[in-house]
Length: 112
Length: 155
Image 1 (tube, helix red, strand yellow):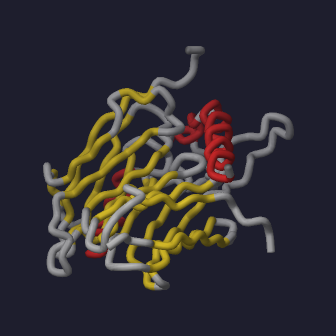
Image 2 (spheres, rainbow over the protein chains, first blue to last red):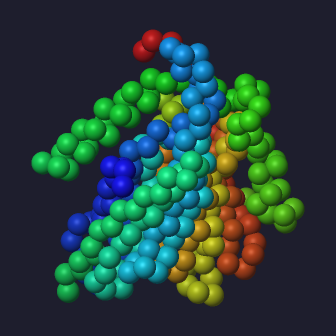
Image 3 (tube, each protein chain N blue to C red):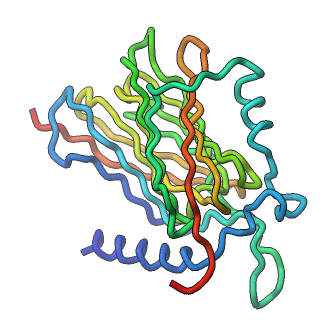
């Protein structure tokens, strides 16, 4: 398996209770190459490589999904809200236009 | 330690990316084969011709002036109870002058609890950023804001 892409899921605030609405941030290292830029050395167009689809799931059940285009910034950042129903695992699955698939998970641990 | 290194690598990578010019995104420059879609065509594809109303329920936050067109923060907050009966179904982030008018679509559910979404997009030049919102009753509302982009030159 190829080395996993670097990414991070962040909950804000870090400490929360069941029933709280928190921010779920996702950031990933990815070139988001538009396919319109030339490589200065080879003079050839750098092929498009950008994340095109993202799904946020809680214990395997999707609750947010996205379609993304090459117009989103390099090393993209995405932020959504979520009402915490209880303990669980948040998983972010994402694919890019070349078919590369990746996944990142983080445990949801509410206090009280 | 791992988290610190991760953040360092994002800052380094983003700094490199920031130098790259997004000017290739302008509609008139887009070479054949790239994702080219005009703003009007994107709206038509999303709404199927349905009416779209400007609404101040859609709070769109973008900088008035973007020093770096490669990384423009966009924040959207739609006033909505986010219940099963009444919620934001999707937010479409569009731009009026990029070669590809579409940046990101987010499909929300009541578990999101708020009609909120934030991301960072590329702007090829001065233009409007538009939040086109689809509600659970099938109607469309929107908000648009202009962003001045200063590209090129030193400092």
